[in-house]
Amino acid sequence: MKPSQQAAADEFAEYYATPRGAHPRSHPLSLTSLGAIANFMPLAQIELTDPRPLLFIAGEKAHSLSYSEDVYAQAPEPKQLHIVPGAGHVDFYDKVDLIPWQKLTGFFDEHL
Image 1: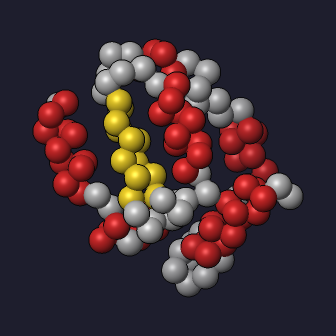
Image 2: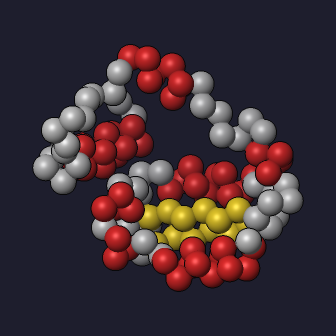
């Protein structure tokens, strides 16, 4: 496993493999889900978002931060990248104190 894959596995396990993300009706990832995930190409048509404003929010410690930075670099303007200090990827699932609410409301107030 590549270091970035291990980081992702560790971060998701911290959430999904503990009581923090457990739910009695949850199921493990099914094999049918893997095809959709494998075929997801978010940058294939990024130019089609133009001229819609884009806001990328990522955690400073997120395994996915580099992906957000790559997509941001390729996205058309107008765009913003907001990195939340100390946050990981899954932290936004349940640690609402880390969600940058003011950034979100400011972005939507300006662009909607």
